[in-house]
Length: 382
Image (cartoon, rainbow, N blue to C red; front, side, top):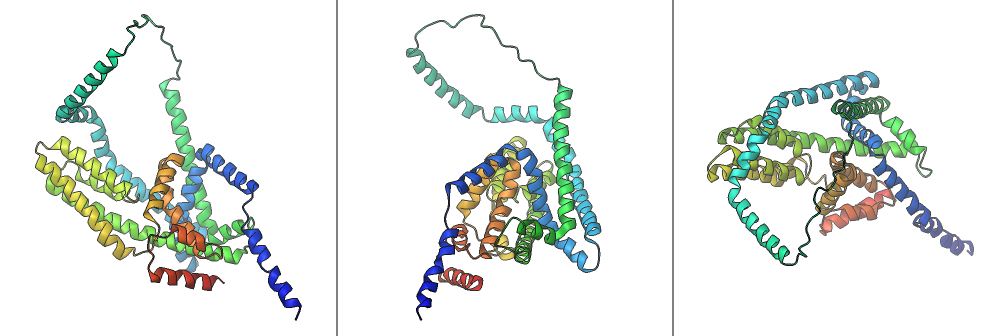
């Protein structure tokens, strides 16, 4: 009878010890973040390869169930995906080069059409300069100031350096993706369990399978939605008489993988192209309004129907992830921001100490169903 109180008092000690956040832990995480930032050229291809491996591991595992070796299925699927991507780039290369070749004329047309606004801004600049001259000391600027001559590398050397780094990153991306697909989730589970004392390989494998399924379903549904948006955008651009409508459809499909910022960027681009191509304001507004309507239908109707509430993440956190991902790793950080949030949420949902993370990442929905789901999740993990 006397042993029960002692036993009940001893239970909370491991939990309280696990919740402690020591300065050494904070220092270690800070050093790790600094390493990722400084050595981004080495980590970006690996992170992108991990994302592509998560997306393509579903088809590889499906072929593996039919007794096709993982190495053969991984090679076949990876080569197919890379060939499709290369074909798409090659298809859009000519119209893109055409627009780059017409860039000087395009800038001239934009300046001509924006001349009234420019004249107004010039008047504001004149007023500001006149006000500044009243407070100037009247000292003459030194004449014949020496100009520093900066010795630079030749153009071929700079081109070879940039090309070499790009080819090395692409080669690393392909090789790491192939190894990840060949090893499959069991390899990732063993590697992760080796660094986690409180997790075994089977538990890690279950979490990896759930992350793979969630990210894979999300990207398959998103790819189908974006393909439909690209086709609809192409049809609308053709109806308005826009030049190279297929290019703007492809741009809408690719950029729509980036939440919020992608559709806004496409809207800005098609509006500028319409302003350069057309002389009437009505056609410019028609192009912009048509794409805006397509984007709203996609975001408010099609995506909730096909994707549902799979991405139950606070929109503010998605925007902040895109912002800091872009500052941290550039375009690669923007690409990795959304799947990283999805993976973090799935991992938190299937770990005992992840309820606070799920609550933090969740949308601003305080309905009883949400509280019920959190209670069911806690009960299942216990």
